[in-house]
Image (cartoon, rainbow, N blue to C red; front, side):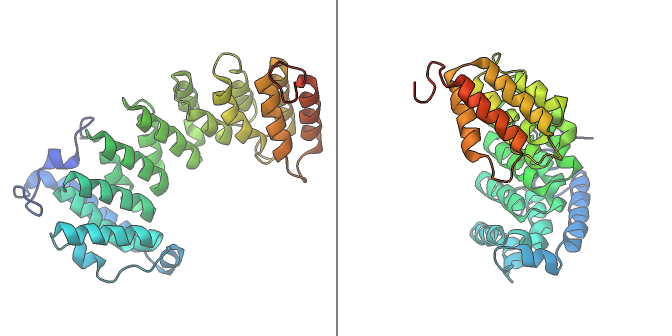
Amino acid sequence: MPAPAGVSPIARFGRPALFGGGRRGPRARPFAALVAITFACAVEASGPAAAAAGGAAFPPDALRRLKSGDPTQVASALDEVRVAGRAGAPAVPAIVDLLAHGLPPDLTQSAVDTLGDVESEAATPALVWYARHRNVAIRRGAVQALAKTGGAVAVRALRAGLSDPDPAVRGFAATGLGTMNAKDALADLFVALDHRVVEASPSIGRLCAGDECDKLAAKLGSMPFEVITGGLDVALFRPTADVSDDIKIKIVARVRELGTGEANRFLRSVQAKWPRRGSARVKQAVDQAVIATSASPGAEGT
């Protein structure tokens, strides 16, 4: 049975005595099972490729310190595992176990952040719990971490995060879905954008195709210009295989039709950044739109 929103696994299953709590009872078994599954996945992910991907070597005594019960040693081990990045995958089961036992808020935050920096999908199930934590800072960290650990379970959690009471959590969830290339979340991102989750716009620009990109452009004039163009700018510079030249030209035309100074400034910024090997058709449309809007009040040079 899933925990209610805002209830951590620690609150639900009890707090053992590692950092000062009661004994582990039968209700701790579901989270213990999660730790076992996490361990198996982390072992599979901790081979030479994982070590090679890290920014530093995995500290040889990190596991001992994580299991020491000494908050100072745990904190130092978490810091070193975080620096190790993906090479820190062998520490994931121990960190998940620490979270299952219960940690003070500062160490909980550090553990969540470390799981994100290790980028192991094995950490995702544990992080999902903390994406619903009553402490908003921990919730924010868990949502950001899920965008790095990935997997279908993480996508579902981030989709749920789009309706979180905290604006920052909603924003991190929207950004994370774009980072994870979660195309199935496009409809949710459009709903979030309509509810003023402005971070949804760049993610839509990163994920949209065909009429979906035009749907974003159609919001010009009904929502703040800089919000919508934050997504359109992303869409315009995606490969033609993802967003066709015809759609890009249609986006440019929608911006041009506004006939405003901010439209001209946006078009000029696209013009300045357009790659030399980019589509000549789209560049021509942008060049013509810049000229057409150059006399608009507030345009550059007016």
